[in-house]
Length: 289
Image (cartoon, rainbow, N blue to C red; front, side):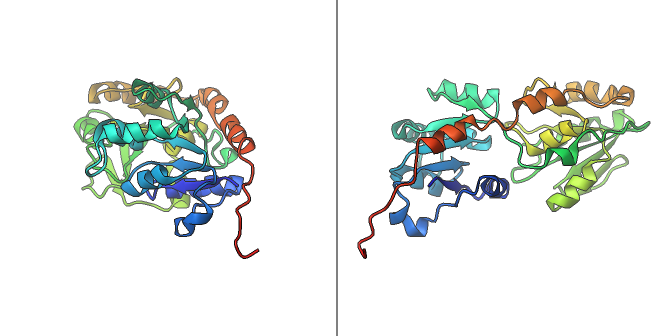
């Protein structure tokens, strides 16, 4: 049996993964029955994640998502330095998977070889090419967790009055401006419905994995400005570059055809098949029998 260990930071995504493959969550209160079982680790964000990883004796596969790589390389956790965390990761000899080439290169810089295998956890057909052009385009972005500076929200305030475009910011309680509108965090269904009318998505975190929202936007035929470089999105590294991207939007009468590239990259679970096949169920001895 393969188990899933999920950091609380990403549990809302990985719950869907567990439903897709019917893998049980680790129950660390029953540690004795699971410590030698194979585990897939999603999101190494806090001390509990690393301490469980340290004492686990079964096979391990780590799926790196985004901010967890920053913790591993630059930040550390509490009194544990990045060097300590890196030595622990190397010592355990896990298999490593990640979401994009940027993260793969970062892991490689500290001697960790990984495969790039992004996955989409929703129904692709739900978002298939519903793009509608608009005389006055609207774009959206979002934040969660970290500060609004981390998510590039100040870039929007800096350039908003220079284009005839409406900006919609989800998950941030700011003060509305003439063409900048703020929304609280919305449940997934409401968010998915709300974003369908927009023409572009702005994904601007300082460091990122592969956002499910980026995938939704491309599948819908929307255009995407990304601070992380991807073949199917416009890479922007400053407010000025973002402004140039936005000035072109009124001329985008057809949907973004890079959806074909995106679909070719998604949901290759060869790594999962191999990990599961190499780790059959381990029968634990039961002293009562």
